[in-house]
Length: 100
Image (cartoon, rainbow, N blue to C red; front, side, top):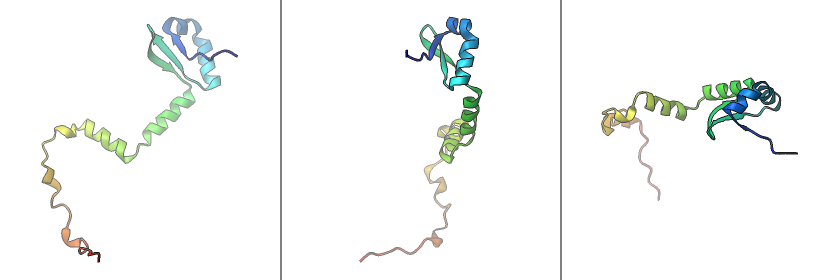
């Protein structure tokens, strides 16, 4: 059995488009399309695309936070480090524990 090919040039993709789409659908594998040897696009099954959409929609806190920082250019905001200094009510902190 030969090597399973996953990279095709744009010209090859154009000539074999229907067969490649059928292959992606049946074998559940992606096909990379190249231009002058460099990847430029991917053909993948609708099921795989939907799975990727669902997983990207279910971001965790950290991913959402990072996106917010980029969107709002948080690094460029002029916020002093001590802006949060008196946010917490220190009177609610437990007394210092002394270990003997």
